[in-house]
Length: 383
Ligand SMILES: Cc1cc2nc3c(=O)[nH]c(=O)nc-3n(C[C@H](O)[C@H](O)[C@H](O)COP(=O)(O)OP(=O)(O)OC[C@H]3O[C@@H](n4cnc5c(N)ncnc54)[C@H](O)[C@@H]3O)c2cc1C
Image 1 (cartoon, rainbow, N blue to C red):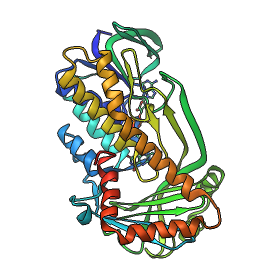
Image 2 (image 1 turned 180 degrees about the vertical axis):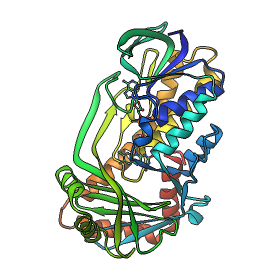
Image 3 (image 1 turned 135 degrees about the vertical axis):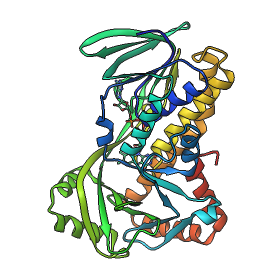
């Protein structure tokens, strides 16, 4: 493999976006992706992208990604078995939309098509096995078509989605929950609303899409497995019991998939000539749809720093330290936000439910606080 300035290990949405952004600024990039062909198009995840993410993707020329994304104009947040609800609206937050709903596969296809028309060298079916760096360069051992070799670069960016490549100690917490993901339709149309309903078992999100709704239903892992095998009628009855009848009756559309959920945070996201971004740096609970949005900000900021301060050496240690310091606040705030939501709403402590209700009521009564929350969800901690 010819020596590149930067190697990106992992061609998911974050790694692909970084590779494209670096290519735009004239950096020589090789992208290693373990999957081959159209594997990623089968990923069942639906992503709610913030307005800020769409602006980044637009700059990379991958927005909108093929099939028109569905706008979220209003988010309704509520808790099951407690009073209080909050509505966040795009108008109040001062943005055209609070977010946009896209399929992971559609986004990945758009990124792959853009990569094909870029200068990035894409190696599919290339599994990065281990990474290490010193003051001069970094190396990654790669297995491709049964052959193992080593590739070197001035910088190796790890974007393997929190797979096997690690640079430092990792803090892990198993939520004991899984997200059950599928499409459903309801008697009432979505009217560009999204719903996040907190239950003791975990949050249930309904995101508007072209067929009706993308359901992301978080429950204890054993229950997720049981829900996935229920017949359609029983499944919809359980869904109805949890969500209520605000949207009329539900029908199931398509297969149900399960994603086990854990928090995984790398203590150090940088090491000599190596950097972790996206899920490789932090894998979050999908509550409030923050993971990809945060990862994309990682990619964008790293590419921006390399373009403005790289001076021909994208892996220079000072630059990587600046990146780590600059990303710390957004990263820590977003991890804390999602993790606290799960801990706060999953606890069955007397008094907690009314307190949460009071929190909702306060949020509902205070437009500036609502706007603050909405803008943080849209633009991250610096919004
Ligand atoms: C149910 C669910 C719903 C979600 N909803 C949202 C949402 O609404 N909004 C949001 O912002 N986020 C959401 N997320 C989080 C989001 O999916 C992730 O944050 C995002 O996919 C991270 O992108 P990534 O590129 O870092 O990692 P991944 O998407 O995991 O991609 C990693 C890539 O690296 C490749 N790879 C892995 N190992 C290797 C290796 N050794 N060598 C080479 N390549 C390798 C993989 O094949 C893959 O292509 C959700 C997550 C889940 C589970």
